Image 1 (cartoon, rainbow, N blue to C red):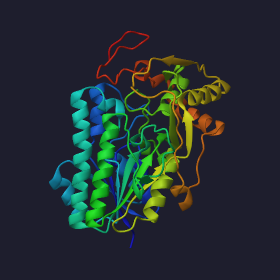
Image 2: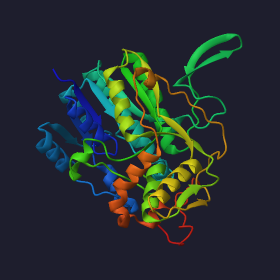
Image 3: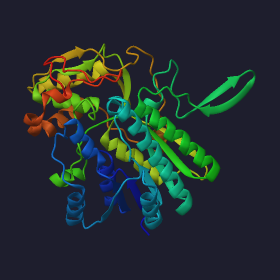
Image 4: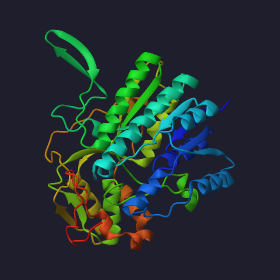
Length: 397
């Protein structure tokens, strides 16, 4: 029998490519989404660069092209009865949990957005834990975490746990977390709740602490325009490399926050799919809460901008770099070295950020260059809870 997978947040940037990836490989896949990401985009007045088909049309097109079925359930996982019924009826072997508000700037806009982010993310995860415990306790939960949970400690970042010696005694404890936003705090709360549930109910949990993702086209998404996933370049939902790419094709200066010495972990969207597949095919044991640091490379932000600028110029784009006041409260110059060996040990074959990869991505979004809205790329959300004006134009969001 085919394995059954339930994907929470299956309409999202990573959720939809994951659904197609596993469906193509013979899994019975069902997705859950309340389409809230599309509403949040409308709330702040932005949209993805490449037009997105509605979820139901995506599902229909996928079935027409491949003959494979992706079931869809529209509803909110913070509603206990809805999620409980879905888990009970689907009886998944594996649950991939992307179903959360995913943006640090969104969570830092004001009190309302901070509270919403934490309630939405923590309650949804708790509802999942209880539904799995009640209806399919052998299922493997793969939760998308973030490297941002760790912060930037002045020691090497291990994979979830740290060996401690204190006053002559030793133990292995969860790695200390220093998250940098209310969003990242919500992910820490998720990790603690899932670790607790694994311990007391013998659930199987893998926490994928993911770096910053870039890219948009996967083999499945390239089959038809209806199947493409979202590509955000705005300051709220856009990841930094995707933002730089959009700025490059539009001829907008690449916005580097502050000194640009902030170091982060990165991976190609193709490697996100590869990592989730490795985790799904090698599930955690009963009672195990394991942590994989999911990334392939580490860069300084300014270094990334320089990479994109060089490739952009080689393709004829006008690519300049501008350093703007950092809206975030963070260390801009710091030590950063994170371990990421667990997925490599399982067989991860990284797609690295080469000149060729950047050139390919610039070519993929080049047809949409005229649709890039310049105002959307400038930082507006201050970590002090204020929405500021565009530094160059003086316009309000």
